[in-house]
Amino acid sequence: MFKLLKSSHINPVLVDVGAAGGAPRIWRSLAPHSTLIAFDPDLREMSQSRGGRYHRHVVFNRAVTHDTRADEVEFHLTSSPYCSSTLPPDLPSLSDYSIHDLFLTEGRVRVPAITLDAALAQLQLDRIDWLKLDTQGIDLRLFQSLSDPVRSGILALDMEPGLIAAYSGEDMFMESHRYMLDHGFWLSDLKVCGAARVRSTTLQVMNPEISTRQFFAQRMLKKSPAWCEARYLRTLDAIAGSSREEHVLLWTFAMLDDQHGFALDLALAYEKMFGPDEISTAMRQHVHIKLRPPFHYSIRARLMAARRRARQQESRTE
Image (cartoon, rainbow, N blue to C red):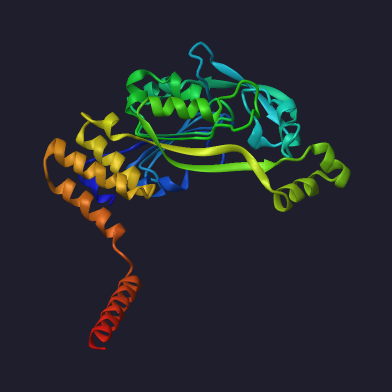
């Protein structure tokens, strides 16, 4: 599948905002062909490398902001480092959930910041192919802050909007989802994540140790929806008129996300626009290989068909 990228000289640009846990696993097979741009405000200076897992790997020592006038932003440092955000936690909204204490603010710090457009300009890049946003409440506004040419060229987007108000003024799923559908995307995947609906004061009565409380809430209690991990892909209508390279890239992203039906749609759309060629043939063949039943399944299917024919033959002879 990835020979298409190499033969077409396509090098995807992957941008990871909120890269504390490392680049998404789904990008690993793209790595040898791709430029990865990540952001880590804990670094002392920007780092750049070639020839590792990724074709090109750039890490900015800055946070990402949607404000073009800001050269730094304030972070609210919470009890859990994974909950720290430029937005203040909405503790009253969280008071009914087991994760409330993870959002308690322990301090504030100002860190250097940069917009996504400015980062691209610094690297002399003019596009993002797949953007992953995990910014604790400001995913939508970061996407909206991109210049029109960059934003309209994004083919895949991962974001983690809230289903409850964990932060004051955060971008919620409903508004984010509506915006994406209205701007040429469709929802390819959705994982709903959650927390137990129980007050931290109730957990304290049961056990004073915070680690034990969190273990109990995570393992023993039903989780209620609190946020989600959403993946969006460009629609066929939105990509109509785009280049061969963009069609191949979106097809590749669809295959990685196991959207084989959409990948077939893309292969046919490619043929309709550019005519049949080696690329369209390869696109179709790769989908057919993915959809081919496993060998053991095909053997079983043939045996069952043979048994049906035998039963039918017996019924006709009786």
